[in-house]
Length: 67
Image (cartoon, rainbow, N blue to C red; front, side, top):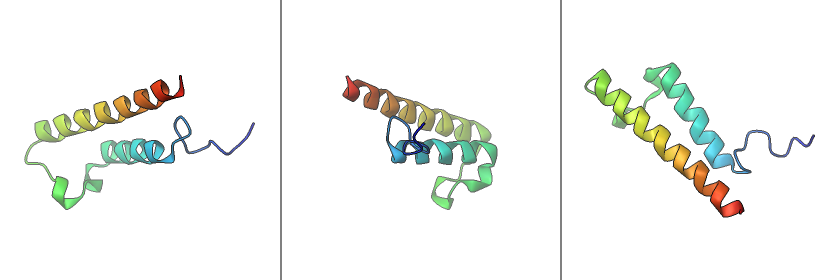
């Protein structure tokens, strides 16, 4: 098995890096940058869900492009 596609999603390193960053933010909210600080846990949860949806949509788009 080739290791060329390790650390990539659908061959895309940017998507992989975004997912890894999102997972790190979920594991430790202190990773969130100062311009992304939130007033409440609900705001943080809403932001993280929005980010997840954007990432998943972009992954879906790369699948569509492959067809």
